[in-house]
Length: 229
Image 1 (spheres, helix red, strand yellow):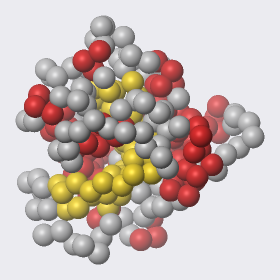
Image 2 (tube, rainbow, N blue to C red; image 1 turned 30 degrees about the vertical axis):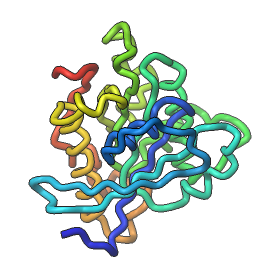
Image 3 (cartoon, one colour; image 1 turned 45 degrees about the vertical axis):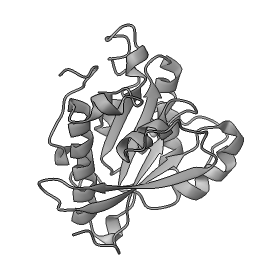
């Protein structure tokens, strides 16, 4: 049974309009047309699996509009136990921009006047100690299944992330699909991570020499570009 005192949080990041809110609506089984997120919207999903009898997981949907970027840091300073990065499969820039989102998160929402050196960026990205899922949205609009299948920024490798593509508007096809199972596996990994770390290390940073990589907590490791695996 879920422990109401345990807050398990996942932060969802990505450019405006890539489908973050649509993804959240899919996970909470809310088939409604999404509206623009101003600041942050929090929804709760109840997750059950063979490993966990029932856990409430908070989904923090962070607005991607530049108009509200000064307020994002307030939300990013909370404690999170997993990250979902969302990009639009038909917009390659939204994929590249995920690196900027990860760096902003790793700095607790702080802005820097200029880009860091590449080595410094990689070090900062690799310091994140959270299960990470990269979701390519608008899979139904993708005319070429291999168009964005390559990790052009090494973000997947540096985060030890797992990747799926999905049509967030199709609730019927999502049910019992490969994508649904991968998200359930991700939620298992997030809960496992939350329960395995002490309060001292329950932050988005870790020492790789003393901690197990969250990627090893996943039960899957493949990259999917369609519904049929």
